[in-house]
Length: 204
Ligand code: HEM
Image (cartoon, rainbow, N blue to C red; front, side, top):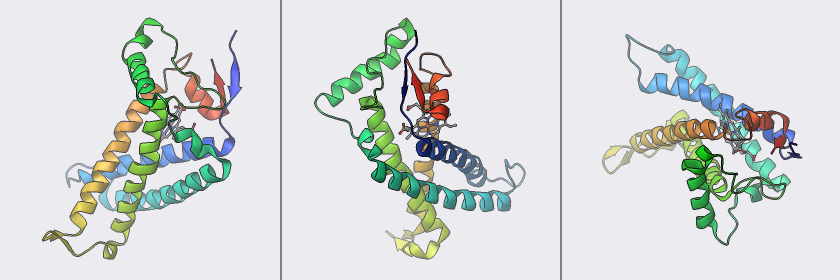
């Protein structure tokens, strides 16, 4: 018989799908701007720039909400990997994803109400949400107000490192998203974790 626990409050689910939608819009318009070619474009340049700016500001607002709501509700604690044995638990999780999962091994650390994430998830989500996404947003804000950037860095245009960081951090979010969607299929059924992110109920 399947067992269900209620894990995710509505604010978290609403933030998650808002954030995912904005990230996809930013990825498509961002790729269109980065690989701009007059003969071939995903989205016309000026339209892509306008949508990218609006979605970027919306992402900043959604991110501010995420940080505040995490502080107010105490959900930030989920993102802190709890010692002892963090690295050993991460390794066990990696072995499970790379090997055990293909042979029907049970999940080594199924979520509980107290610990929603396994150690690997906590570290990856922490790095993405508190390092990589802030870099994307801050560099994006500098792009929106280029006067904020120093005129020159090491004799080069001051916007160049900002552009490179923005691109690399954006690419890292896209790579994370692809791995994240694949890992989203590793619940009891391929659809279970996606359903959980909609209803809040985790099935095991
Ligand atoms: C279409 C795109 C996406 C899909 C289908 C998706 C799907 C999912 C699913 C199924 C879960 C629940 C499994 C789990 O707790 O690990 C989840 C959780 C999560 N996702 Fe996504 N996701 C998407 C995009 C993103 C993006 C772009 C980010 C961040 C940049 C993100 C950040 C998170 C976080 C932080 C959680 C954990 C929330 C919590 O329980 O506190 N997701 N996502």
